[in-house]
Structure formats: structure tokens, C-alpha cells
Image (cartoon, rainbow, N blue to C red; front, side, top):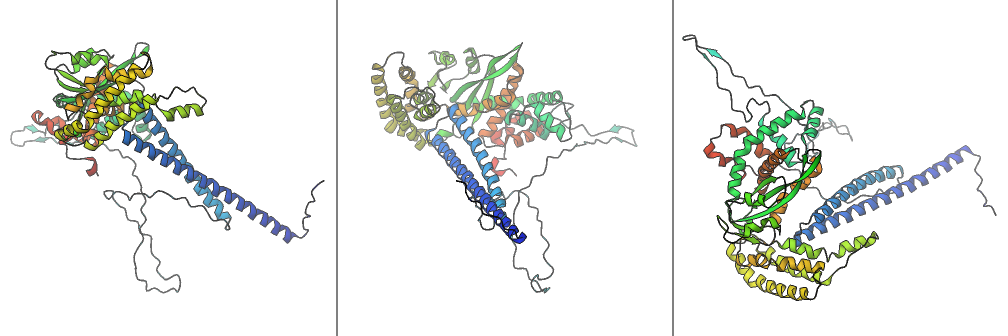
Length: 546
């Protein structure tokens, strides 16, 4: 049976009214659909924002620094960025659609409160001309009651300039001697690049991970064509000029009684292939036990990971080394070592990670959702993580306290937990197969137990080696941009610049501004007073930068 169709009216006015009603219904439907889409986008953005905040809080609480966790946070931040962008677009689309349909109220997304713009930014006041007469009655006796100010953030594009240094020559009318002021010192002999430009090159390459070829492309778009080889020459000359500061930081780091040590891979070009070289870091950071000496990070480069490299780096040093269980460190811990003993301090983050991977319920659930193979989730591993986390809870309460206070709290609270942990690990190991993954994780701790309990008797020792891992984080970030070092000399140069930039960051100093000031002053600065240019002696901190 066919449905009966409503006959259309023959009157033109009626047809127009019918068409207008249909248009209004279509506009209403479109507006409701746009509002629903905007509401859904806003909800997804809020959920993503809350998930990211929870992940960050968990990371702060449990102190994990695994590469997988960092990648997860980065992915969540990228996802939140896209969702916020989608929500903003859908919000505007809903507003436009609702304007066509007055009967549908536009969806208003609840936006996060924005912080006011910093006070140090210059303000340009633009006053909209006021009416000369009252728009209601035409009267000209207007009296100002106040004003509403709306602030809009704007940016001035980077500007370039050429500084001409003029040295006038004079001739003496009496003796006909020609005199001229001496040429000013320049950080690069016969150099053409100013200190701010050099600092930008170095910081963009090693601090922001922008290779010189990309910088050259950007400069060319801004009307300043400079070849990559020309820029490379300036980087090499500036690095050479900064070497005295690198040596001072090196001496400062190796004067510490406790160091964090770690290394990471860095690809380097070889004949017809790419080799895997290493960047090593040694971090001095006394802030966890209220030390007064400034923090610093020293980087070294090597073509491989043989144990001879850390032995050469620390050949004149003795003290406490916090590091992972890399076998190349073993000779450093040998008895009777000269010039003095190096004591190993274990990293609980590494030990915890081995158990955590066997008890990662969330990762197993994600693999199951993707129909991927999942491994066993072991209750023993979960309990081990909980026992180690109890030690971290105690450490968070004494972080920044003095050596004496940390030692007292550890003897009272941590020592019993460590004794229980050792007994528990020994009992569990006796029940496991020798080749079981849990047995390997347990043996990692038990075979180095002296190194793991050393923190109980020395308040200077930290529970983890995270200070070194944080310092090395710049290298994996850079690898994604510049892919590899061009040569061994390039790796050594990277070690020098990473040392300067990461040390500045550890001391809350803007690396770009510090490098610009140092490069402007180092050429004629007295060699005996070079320590005045070190980051911790530099007066401008992040909070005071204009």
C-alpha cells in the first residue's frame, strides 16, 4: 500500500511559507547536530585533559622515569592538543549554525581559565574613539565613567640588523702620526656573527634540536640567506671559545663526593654505514640532601660502550657513584683502586622497573584489547613493586632535608623495610626456577644488595639514578630531529654544548640568554675570573627574564 502524499498548495505565497518552514526545520536540525557535535568534542577534550593530569600525578607520585611512560605522556599531550583543536572548531561551527536558527541556543563550551599575561610584557594602548554625542538623545555633554580593557597577545616577528663598528683614523697635525682606536674583541676571530646570533645558533641546534640546515632554511625565508657550511663554521668557532667554561664545569663535577652516571646511544656516521656511539653523563646534584654546591651535568662522547671509557672519565675521581648495573663500571668498584675507592649505590628505579614490567596490569589490558598476546601478571612482582614503593614514600618525605635528618629517618623507617624485603626476596627466589623472569629480577637486587642498602648509612645517597636519566633526556629528543652525528668530532662538540646547556637548566638559568651574554664578554674577560661567567654565578634567572 503506497503512502498518500500531501498535495502541495497552488498558491505562491503558501508555497513560499511552506519552503521557509522547511528551511527553518533544516536549520534547526543542523544547529542541533552542530551543538551535539560541539558538546561531544568538548567532553572528549575534558576527558583527555583529566587522563593526562592523572597520568602526570601518578608519575610524580611513583617517580617512574621509564621511556615508555614518557612516550605515553607525549602521546596523551598530542591527543589532547588535537581534541582541544577539534572542540574549538566544533564550537565555532555550532555558533554559526545557531545564528541561522534563532530557536536553538548555541552550545557554550566551558573553557579553562586563562592566566593573565605576564606583567613584564610591554603594553600598547589602543583607544577606540568615543562618540562625540549621545546616541540616544544627541546630547554632547558626555562624562567618562570608566573603561573596559581587553588584552590581546601579539608577537613582533624576529628582526635582523647589521651592526657597523666604526673606527675612525686621525692624523696628528704636529707629528703627523696616524692613530686609530684598537679593534674590539670578538668571540670568533675575524668573525661576522654577533654574540646573540651565535647563541641562537648553538641553543637552537643543541637545546631545541634544530639542525643547521633547517635553521638556514628559516633564515632564508626571513631574507637572510646563509649556507649551512657557513653556519657550521660559526658553531665550531663558538664551541672552541666556550671550551674554558666546559673545563670549569668538568672540574666542578669531578670535585663532588657523589655522582650520578649514565649513558645513551647516539648514531654517528661512518664509511657507508651508521655506527652506534655513546654519550655519557655525570651529574652532580646535592639538592636532595640540602647541599649548598650548585648542580651541574658533564657530558662525554665515545665511539663505543667499552668499560675503558668510564674508567678514563673517572680516572682521577673517587667517591659514591649512583648508576645502573652496567658491567663496564665493575673495575671502578675494585678494592685497592687508585687514587681512591669508588662505592656503588644501586638504583631502585631500575630494580623496580624489572618487577613492574611483570606486574603491569594496565599494559596487559591494552594488549588484550588489541587481541595481542599477553604475558603473565605475577602477584609476586606486584608485591615487590608495593614494597619498593613504600621506600619511595619515605624518601619523598625527607627529600631536601639535611644529611643527618635523612640518615636518622632511614635508620628508623627504611632499615626495617629493607630487612623485610631481603628476607622476602630470598624466600621467593627459593620457590622459583632459576631461569624464570621473576628470578632474574630478584637476583638483580640480591646480587647487588650491598649497593642497594648503602643509602641506609649515608644521607647523601639518593634512592634512584633519575638525576642522570633526566640530564640525558635531551639526547633522545635530539635524535628524533638530527638523526645522527656527522663525525666523532661532532659527537665531542655535542658533549660540550650539552654540558653547558643542561648545566644552565639545572641552575634555573635561561641557556639562550646566558650563552649570548657569555659570548659577548668572554673574549676580553680576565682568565682568572672566568668562574664569574658560570651559570650559577650568573645573575639572571628564569623568573627575572624580561
